[in-house]
Structure formats: C-alpha cells, structure tokens
Image (cartoon, rainbow, N blue to C red; front, side):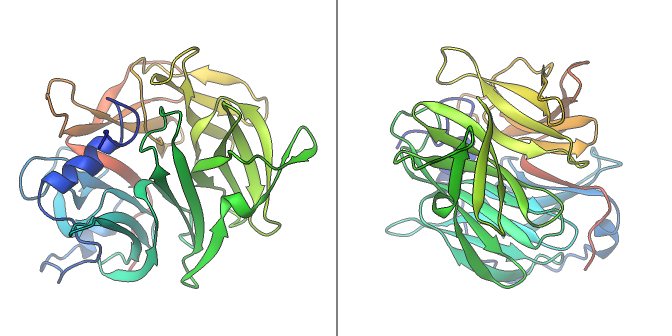
Amino acid sequence: MVVLCAVALTIGYGISLSRRSSPVAAQAASPRPIDLTSLLRTPVVVFRSSERGPSYGEVSVAKLNDLNAPRVVTNLQCDRVDMVATVGLCLAASPGIYTSYKAFTFSPDMQVRHGFNIVGIPSRARLSPDGRLAAVTTFVSGHSYASAGFSTATTLYDVSAGREIGNLESFTVTRDGKEIHPTDANFWGVTFDHDDDRLYATLSTGGQTYLVVGSIRTRTLRALTTNVECPSLSPDGTRIAFKKRAQGSLVQWRLTVLDLATMRETPLAETRSVDDQAAWFDQNTVAYGLPRTSDQDSVINDVWGVAADGSGAPRVLVAQAWSPAFVQTGISG
C-alpha cells in the first residue's frame, strides 16, 4: 500500500505506522485510572502521541502554559483526533483479517460516547466550535491527495443527536452563480463556523481545487476561490489557513492564510511542504504537523507553529505529537 496522503510529508505516516505498531482499537477499552479533572480545567492541547513506545498512537493531553511538562497519556488509540471543550472526535483503525475503520466521539473523561460507521481510510476529522457537529473525510480509493486517481468521502454528523447529516456530495454546488453537477467531485477538509450552519471545505473537480462555503441548513455550497486545500477557520472567523499547491507540483504545498474580507493571501514563513489540515493555536499562530526527516521511517511527528501574518520563523510547539486540538478555555465535564 502506498503511504497514506501525499508521498513523504503526509498524514499517512501516522495511519500506516499505527498498523505496524500495537493494535488500534476502534472503541475504547476500560479506561486507565487517570484523574484528568484538574488538568482539563486549564487550557490544554489534545493530540495523538507519536512518541516511540507503548504510548504511540494514543491520545495525550498537555497543559498549554507548560508544553514541556510531562503529558498525560490516555488509552484512546486514534489515527486522527479533534476536541473542543465538551466532546472529542476520534478516527481509528480496527485491525483484523480485513482492517476496518470507525469514527467515535468521546467525553472529557475519555469515555466513548457514540460511534459512526465510516467507509475508507481516515484522513481528516473536525468538530464545530461547540461540539454539536462533526465532519469526517476518508480515502475511498487512491490513498493520496497527490494521486490523480484519489477519491474521498466527506460526511457530516449531528453529534448531539447521534445521527448522520449526509455526504457533501449530496449538497447543491454553485460556481460563478451557476449550479454545477461535476461527476468527478471530491470534498475534504471541512472547517465549521460558530453558528452550527456555515462551513468551509475543499472541492476538487476538473483538475482544480476550490474553497467552498456552505450552509448545512440549505444543503448548498458555493465556490469562493481556487487552489485552497484543507481550510481551517480562525477563532474569530475572519481568516482561513490552508495549504496551497505549488505551481506545477503534485506533492508540494505552502501554508497560506486567506483574509475572507479582502480575499488577500499571505504565505506563511514555513517553507517546507505541509500536507496537513492546520489548526489555530490562537488568533495569531497556525499549527501543523510535520514528520522528522532525520528518521528514516518518519515514525515521529512534531507539531509546529508559525505566525499567521507571515512574519517570524517556525518553531516546535509540541514534540512527538500529531493531530493537535487546542482548547484554550479548558474542558468541561
């Protein structure tokens, strides 16, 4: 199997390597006797551990005000994880004769709440700011955003009701004021606004990618601009961080921020290719994952941060980590 996601700098390292390490549970086992109460009341980062050893692939928690302090490791195994103050979202593999995959939500005390059946290899996972909605993207063929033959499925879920809302392919799409019906449409990288209705995502059709904005209530999507992949809405809802494909390249992406009011793009100071859906550390910093190139098999990933205005230089925010979710207000039980 080719590496999941794009060639070398890809989320697939974590997914494919999780199959080579300890088995990944699609549901949580009996929780370890860990008291997270005091920790979760403070701002935290929740992430997938990429540290070699027994914690590899497990959801971990660290204080935002002391990222170098010892982290707390839970027993949840996830390929992708997201979390807000009230709920978490996990995409995981269940090895067997045939590997299957599941998405499930979990509570602040790391107990599984509700499972959703998914088809394909986990790629992206996002919750709305209040945790009422979830979006899951999987590869149903191709395994890579750089592959000409890749195909994705992106499904929305009502977390509070425990039901599926639908696949984005069932939404009505318009471009330049006209309704389109592309037979080659692929959607991925959903990010939600604060109103539990508006969302942004990537649409690929005809060899071009588009940033689309949509309404869940009306089940519509509208193309805004081109060459935007894996959008991530800023906490104040004014900017989109995304990966922009380098001209003439299938496997190189540049982190960029789009101002939604002016549609002005700002390339960020990270010049390495980033194949990840960025997360916002705060209003001024964009976070993302990269594998350590010094490791031949790139088992270890680090979460980096860079200024959202294009200034400064990248720095490691969380070492030996992947798929971060920054909960600035603390988590409520």
